[in-house]
Length: 137
Length: 137
Image 1 (cartoon, chains in turn purple, cyan):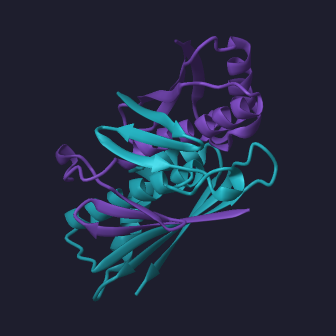
Image 2 (cartoon, rainbow over the protein chains, first blue to last red; image 1 turned 180 degrees about the horizontal axis):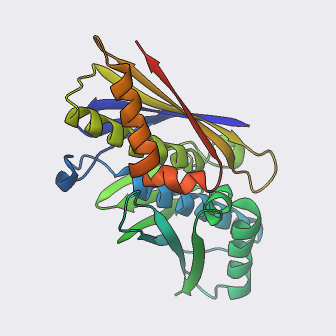
């Protein structure tokens, strides 16, 4: 399997990303010479992971006939202070809201994503520590 | 250093990413139960790399007083066929357009990004093969 993306330089630090007909703009913050017109590239690493495992979990829960009212995936990343500044750890917080949510099924869905389905997590695990916790309301 | 992102589930396979006040929507394709309202999470791994190294290169070239007319970073990724489907290789194509572009400086800027500055590349190298080429028009 193959996949392709292109980013086109627009001006200054502004780049437009293009993938499968979807476009959005990335930019650096003012203190790094940008104008903050869009997200910075590095946190997109975490968005990629959060979206990947989030989609896994919601589709596994659907198959398990578990209904949640609200669901979010937050990721806290630790970066080195020295160049190249890269992530040493990402901590994933899965947060659910709903009535009588079955904790065992929520945990099982997360485990299936982390161990079997999420290709982003599989890649990042080779490069850093990946941990997670679950919050249920 | 720390960084944080959140993705919030909206409906079906649609998740809204939020980072530093910037928001955009991710979605799965129709064949995977989504409605293709936004980019898929996994290619965002490549967008993150392309944006990171692209911003490095354009800012290094600015310091070198090299002016380019057009600049793009394309990435081709190879994925495994088996779950968890993850990248085994990313190939970066740096493409420049401009008059009398100094090839040695363009190559130097790319080398500095790949070896010293791009934290996304530093992470991915631990998990897969990263290669690149340069095209000058």
